[in-house]
Length: 137
Image (cartoon, rainbow, N blue to C red):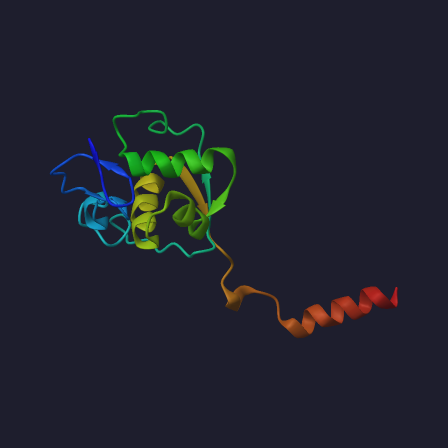
């Protein structure tokens, strides 16, 4: 093993390592060339909450999932996380995380709680009237 200019060790002749960036794996290699999650193309919002499904049949099978899938499951193991948090904590692009979450959702390894669309939220006027009514009590 030798070191690069910053003193980071690397294998000589290795084309898969960059001293500054670390190991290089293209996003399309992690997703198998896919850009949309699952056959249905489910869209995950950045604030959608992801929780590990403990009783899932494939959740503990190390051979069925890739290392990136396992990393996402491990991050969800301790607490519910948003898609944005998973992307940051796993150090993966959001697009890659969305595709991998689609795989995990299809396998039943995780559950995803989608945020309420703004059209279904209560009207602000109604909320103000409720607040004023509570203050009047």
